[in-house]
Image (tube, rainbow, N blue to C red; front, top):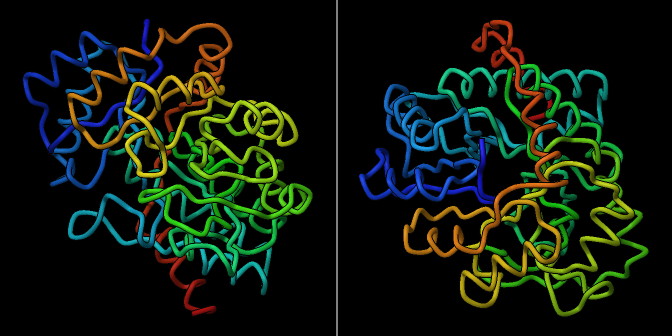
Length: 337
């Protein structure tokens, strides 16, 4: 199936006729859901089916279901999941148990998503928690050191894959030091490159083989003082594809975030020109999506090969008792609460 190199959102819990026609014509590679798109399990399943019907194939459907502050599926229809931080605390006490608990937690999340037809989760975060960093990461981080963060993020990715859901590694090459929320404005990290390479970037280096990744809208001043990673050819070539060695399909973070400058066409062209394989647009505004579609080429070449490798990892999972998994996770988390 021929698709354009972007991922789109939609405005509400049901597709409008205009959205349906747009998606059929623009052929985005995938879709992403937010809280505004979620009401009940049956409604979400219907929306997922409608999105795929609009493009005529089993297009990937993404969601942010990390746990803690960042989860789009919430009670009363879906359970609350813990953020990353307590898993990091458990790791300090019992690394083996922590890795298994993280895997079980992600396996339970995957069971929730798979039942709805959602097959991509924007998890894990491999960002390091840093005392000078903005709280936008905060307890979404597994810890402060690259080795345990990478190990826990790997376990989370494994749990998702076992459940038939593809993980998205974020925010490459590291958002933890960012002194501002990139949803609102552009963060500038001034740490020396050598320090970043040995800490923040190292966590991602250990996860470079994961199938999907998402960039950080963050300037690393010692590498490229003018452009955030998403639109920086230097960060993309030297760091993300270079020293980190990420081999997967790379999407931008949301183009509609406040960190990026210029109109939507400029943002899209700059991200693709820097080396992003896919553009991510999340706010559901049809006028903006039309611009993103216009600047998005047909997915082809190396980007298409990366996409095919990622989608080949989708599988039909064995059934699990998700409630039992959640209970086991909760019991371990209580030990470090």
